[in-house]
Image (tube, rainbow, N blue to C red):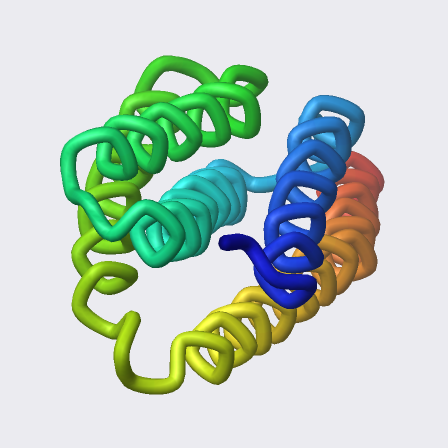
Length: 161
């Protein structure tokens, strides 16, 4: 049976995954390939882990929760990475597959030993990493602008001399 923590966790993961997929598409030109790959891999992995864990705890079986966790991870990996090319999509899909499998195993194994605390811990990791990704994305913008200004002034200086 799904409790409130599980439900809120699923809503959190789905909401943030959709938001970061939208954000990635909107800011494609401003996000470096390294950030794009890490953002995609993290989202796909953690979505698969959290969804797989919750469904594994609810169903106490391995097959169907594994398939669902993998499909969620693949969907997130594709959705977030599609704006950045095939290599990023493939990394996202592979991370989603791995996260879905690991999450299901974790959910079935931990069911008798503090499952709610585990979900809260995974959510805390997820939120902390999302905050770090958010900061990383927007922290790079001023540095990139500064680099562009430096390059422009160097170009101007070389043309003058």
